[in-house]
Length: 382
Image (cartoon, rainbow, N blue to C red):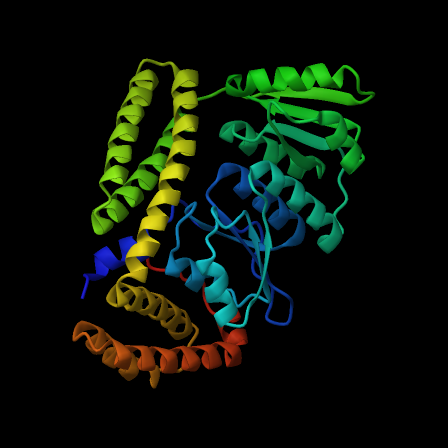
């Protein structure tokens, strides 16, 4: 059987940040909504905005990657519903399957890109939660630092967050959401985009102001941490699937990372920041390819598929044990499952797995209140 650590990397990978919750989980008698979102700065920002306005809990996953520990983390909140922000490339469909297996209602708010997702989320927020906005905060959808600051301003003013690029029609955007007050947030990296916005606003009868955000060394370092973790995830999948093209992509991006680091050390923070923004996008393309390689490998290997399910079940059982739910009848079956997989008895393993899943699903349905009220425990990560 593949070693535990390797399994966790192959099928769990590393989370890039702690889950974000602006408010505590509601009492067992109240409704709990979890928002599942990727670590993409744009999607994460609007997820955190919604959490602030609605009391929902945000759980984050690496862009484009399936991690069974994330499913278990969502399970630990015993939610009534899960709203996924982002399309299936950002938050992969495996999560939907996991959650539906547990009987959790799942709704996806996602478009073809971050701009479509942004509009869909803000529209759905008005319909589902009855949110009303006071003005707008406009920011380039690929400017991570500006987006972080836009979130702060939007929360303070309960304004709608709108992402723009060089092709955005500002007039149509403002008409759609019936807004006339706008705050533009940008760094030097998005200056060209904002200049195009300014030109359009000359024809608009609206009130605008601007917030210029300066890039700091800490900002660049934060992006470097994220990109390094993504590169490590890509590399692990490349090694597991013998994907030489992915390995070459990692090497090229590592050289670009070194170039950004040199700029950082020289004090050229803006240039280093621009390089890191480009790398963020490039890692997403590679993560998408890596996930595709892993899916093919799992499809062609019964053992790998079973081992992934085993990791998922182990994580879910830990959630219930932490809540004090009796799973003593499941544990012996789990040991039999491990042995069956190790011995290549895959038909036996599948039967055991179906039996275990049914037991877990029943225990979860009956123990949701206990899970919701249990002390919060950070799920184990590799």
